[in-house]
Length: 207
Image (cartoon, rainbow, N blue to C red; front, side, top):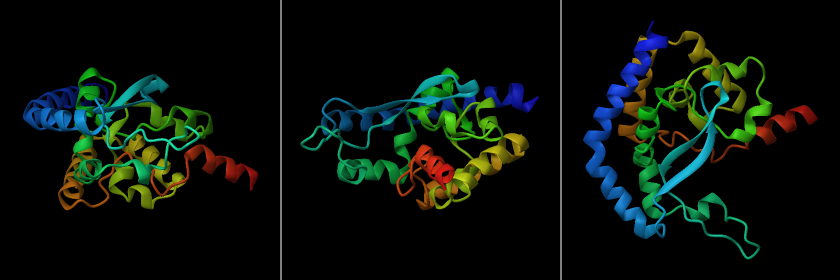
């Protein structure tokens, strides 16, 4: 009952309330980023959601679009702005995802939506992560985030889907709040310091 009805209802209500409360901050950040990022305050990227339906994840843009002489984007560490670093450390860059939750593309709690190009590299067991809506935070994020390798991270997603309950969601929400307040491992969607998942799986196959 919770998984099929109450979870979505709770997501919708909490996201509406959260967006209303955070709206002044949303507008302030949007206004600042209009100037910092040359009129582009938002980061949009296709991600697979429930049943692998692709949607555009939306976050506040924390990096510039600076490119090298050949037209290739510079490494992330050279493009992230000081304000973008602040947004990531405070998790304020995640605020626009409340819109995705309200629309029904995402949930507050669930497996993080990863890149579309990763889809062919999941095992049959790992594909269970796409049977529910992806989340802003999840079991993998409170369990170590980028300190986990890809196999362990995806195993946490499997564990979450198989154990999904109201009590588990409350636990994850509480632990996420503590991490945000303490600024510990709060870059929920970052893959900095990790190989891309497709390259990781290719290397294992070749080995």
